[in-house]
Length: 74
Image 1 (tube, one colour):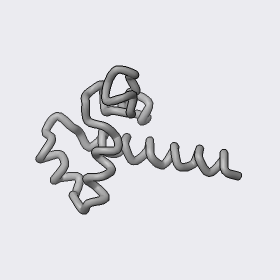
Image 2 (spheres, one colour; image 1 turned 180 degrees about the horizontal axis):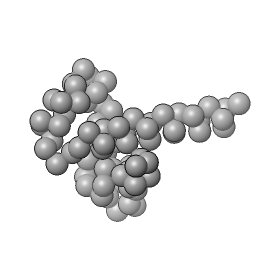
Image 3 (cartoon, helix red, strand yellow; image 1 turned 120 degrees about the horizontal axis):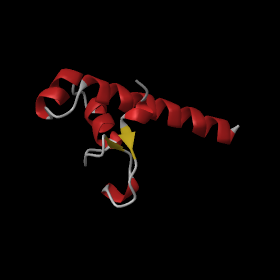
């Protein structure tokens, strides 16, 4: 499954930020939790409606976005 199947962008939800499966939790939220030191297991425990695939999709989305930004800068 690709991140495009999980990450959604809706103009009226969370200011158009990329969210997980149409919910109100954003890619940024998950990345911030990981960056603060939370493990995937801790995130899944705190947010039982998320899946491991959701977290992987957030990482894939961020990596793809970074790659696209590097191409623009080059």
